Length: 207
Image 1 (cartoon, rainbow, N blue to C red):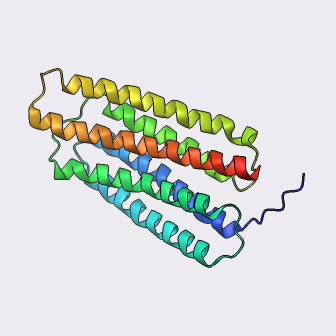
Image 2 (image 1 turned 90 degrees about the horizontal axis):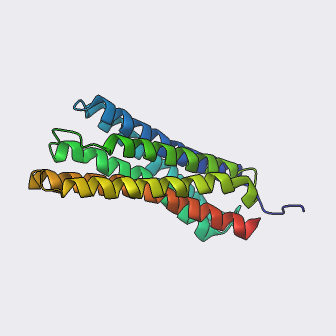
Image 3 (image 1 turned 180 degrees about the vertical axis):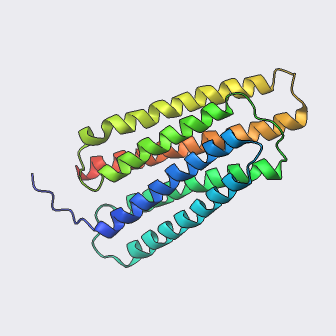
């Protein structure tokens, strides 16, 4: 069947740029964790990626506003842009809290969660890039399923980490700090799943 949908290459370039920022931000966070307590360089690198992502999002939404015929539904395009930008925003907000909260030690499982986030952003990025060439669910289903699997792994890690915090052996202030840090990294993983849901919706509408 011939696909009559318009394919604006600039839109796809912007989507790809945003998803690349998400991957890079997650990788910088994992590197920050590996270099802890030397977090300054990692925070600055993530902050730069957040600025780049904002620029990609602004350009995409501006183009969407002035383009009459778009590659797919405007609302879905808006959701895709906002979702990818939110991943980077969440990572940036998380990284800043290492200095705001004067974090002195790393909790077990946080490094593992950082790895899950990297894997989730990479699977999301691969799915975003396939939108340029395909609207077939079969071409993207493996990646979308992987994002959902990683979100489940993230949930399990978060539950285990929070349970450990509340065992009673951790100072109350440290519990408060790390509860939020774990919740924020899980939110980043959840955002990847939200983006994958948006991609699935796009494919089902336009396949």
